[in-house]
Length: 173
Image (tube, rainbow, N blue to C red):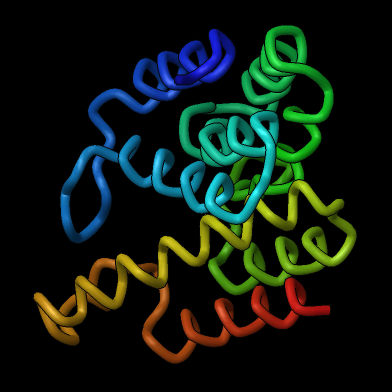
């Protein structure tokens, strides 16, 4: 049985991620978010961390500006608490520079890895669960579609694997 907070969180992701789909499989994006929360639950993380897992892409994938992201982070804190907000913010990758321009893939990933080095246990758990599900999905996509899968990503296989290895290194430290 889920709590009222968890059910509210599910409603938030269904509303904010409506119409979004995974790159290769084209399943509704919110399914990935539920998998992340379930991975966290399976590893003993409590409900606030699971909710942060549901929300881990809200700020970076549903907000068009820093101001909008800040307002949403404030709303997350007001409804779900500071712990959820902190973990969500630690799991959020900045995709734009101060002027609003899109950052190059490698620069984004390097900045995110530096951010992850300083993250708390909750934020690190959320990122690790996210990447675990991403890698599992990628493996299935590669088995189904072959190497053509890489054409749908911003970086090729080598760069993507570098990033996942770095996340694993940080998580294991």
